[in-house]
Length: 241
Image 1 (tube, rainbow, N blue to C red):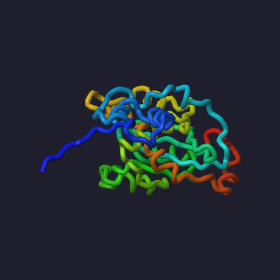
Image 2: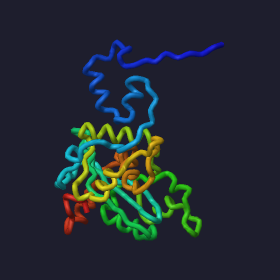
Image 3: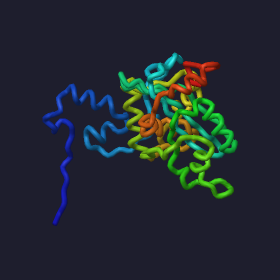
Image 4: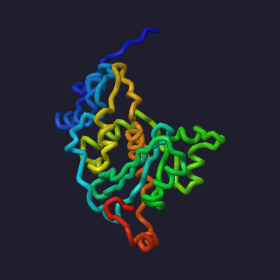
């Protein structure tokens, strides 16, 4: 039995009006547009998030206490990276308000720095950390949990995560404080090679941000009242610690 295929484009779908096509087109990363709209296979290369920084960077501001917060962690010896987010539920906008980016330090050092930013804040971690081990054979995720971090494995669906982050960026529903200079620097260089593969160089904060958006903010919570009393002295309403 022979097989054959017919190419279908958006123009062949009667329920897609011009306004809907325009909205869909703008929501899709440039390298995927021909594939999705015209059925033309394409891997694409170049910048992964081609969105003007003016659209997604903001000056730091005091984060309202009722906005849930969460963090996401990407672990490694060369670089361990974390990002913190706060969610404005009224506008469905996530604000990345802090970052952590340190190399060649043991888990205790990283855990202390993360807990100092709010030990009540839940997080997610690269799921590979469940199998990645320290020299003594202890899984990294187990190690960080034993050091007081509230962690669950993150959703690590790469392409779905990249698309979700892109849609938030282009729609103005993902913002980054201008003080997160390492994350901003990574975004500028984050790209695909000529085979359409994500270039795995200086991408730790990009991975952490993807974890935050895909599963971290779903764990977000507000600061318990007891912490407000304990942290009254020295508490920064902008950073949250």
